[in-house]
Length: 144
Image (cartoon, rainbow, N blue to C red; front, side):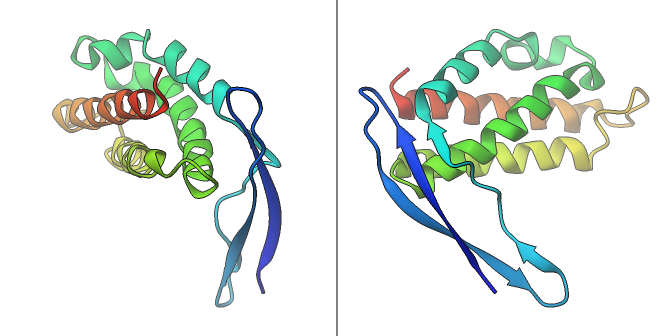
């Protein structure tokens, strides 16, 4: 079973682009796929990314304890989903940065970086640096 939703993207002068997004079903696991909001507002993505680049977790991740960046990572995990949806619906230049953001978030979480007693801070800092690079690339792709 697959579901289809209409997606409208607002950019600049609110250019609407409608496209369908299909969610695939996995065997015995129900519907699989990323949730896409009814509207992906690229200007909102730009604002969010600009705000998050002012965070020390972005600009100097080695200066922070990895667990102190959990909120930053969570916010970027949510932004990555929106960025990937925008890439699928008219902004293909966001595809690479969106996937790299998702991958870096997974690396941070898989390494247990949200724990105060993280065994390998180096792995966490590397994940945060990859996340920062992907955020910077997404901003550049949007021209902001």
